[in-house]
Image (cartoon, rainbow over all chains, first blue to last red; front, top):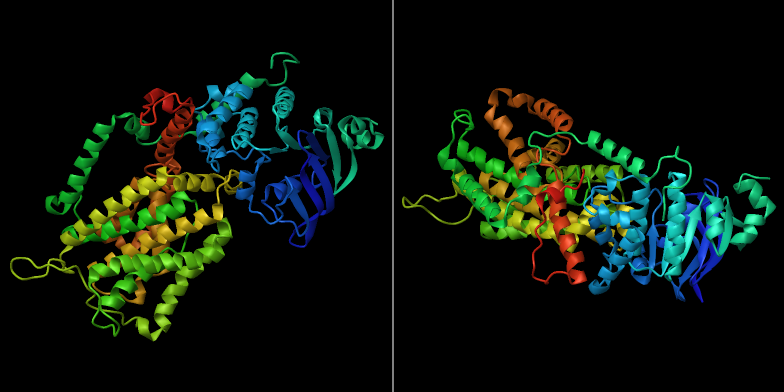
Length: 237
Length: 400
């Protein structure tokens, strides 16, 4: 079943077009990767899906419902949750307060505890540092916190914006392992990455984004083998 | 998930954390009262209340005690000085909701103060041709009027961020003052005299609330401050308060956590404005005279300085900052002329040695922390719903 569908989406910053006529869909249970260079429109796409930006043309449907004009804070309740680029945690709040904010829009308080358990199972590190302020943690832990916080809203679709940004290779491998684990637990994942190698290897399907439009699409393995993608994003060719 | 394999040259989990910890420690500065808020939070509830009661009683006794060295006499009447300080403290508490909690830089707060003053003046002064109502009724009315204009100003401008919002509010602050000058009904520089006061006469038949007697005004304002502080404390710990803190920390992140950021920003603006209006009405009553000269931009900046000095986001700090801003020029009359120079220097010094203000805001976040902990734990069913979890003092600060 199609969970998310973007149809002919265009996004402008003032007069500058960041995304032109983009269409793609995400099926339930998938990991989908969007890869591309700086300025290709990856983060813009994510912010459009989460509702922080409004498209100038086109439509977005989520679970069969048109959400093009829906406010970001209502999309969270509908099941779209984003771990923003550059981690975007609340630096002055502790790990615990950050996670609590993740469940802000929820009414089912009893199930929140289950999700907290789930986050601590995925990231035991967060449990150890529950009283520490987000801003004083290492980059990898902030990324864990951002993903954990996004999971606290019990989303149907998890949007991850560059989870590997600025992290040591050790962390990158670990984060991607956890992304697969989250997906195995039943959450659909849409991933935006510059680290094409990992992102393609983990994805069921993937898209290559260049200056605001999709230039290649296919399964993760297909794109890994595609000579053009190889040359441009995998550093071989 | 093993993180020990792979080449050892790249930083692993533990060493990266070590670096982050070290950097965090270096960034933290030792204040004048290190760990004051931690120690306060570690005290048992009863002790906290006891200390608070003593402080409040002392505050009420201030005009009678007239403590030497601290007093503003012989230069200025100490009781009237206290009344003015309390009005400034109330202003700072209100502005702290906007600037401190929600992180919205409002440089035109004096406009709401002015609206409150004019409301009180135009409905009580004999110079005003309009309906006259008892002075005490103008207090809620001033709050309503200021709140209305807070929403009117907030709805179009709160879509702006940071610098833009500051500029627009700065403009609004001037608009009210200029309107007071050009609208004949607001009487410009002539102003309104004999603004009303609360009822009541003493044994000799004199009204209790005279413009020349500061003590009753001080007690009235102090009582209102306590009520407002209690309300602000409750707000801080509520869903609204948590939303404000999240907006202040990262607005986009708050929005994608499900916080209706725009709505809560308007709320902060409206609540802040209503307290500003209330303090304006008290100011008008105490001074007894309102014209367009008292509501300039410099006063607005002074209000912001009060909040920043006290510790942005800390309501008790705001009371302290507001009182200080009013107190310094009254105490040191010889240098009152240079008050802005002194405030500038004081602000620079405070920002260097105590970047969070005199009483930094971490205290309020800690209060929230306890709540978050209880809620998450409570949801797990580990503790009974009514059970209070008291954190060990050492645990609260983590390894910051």
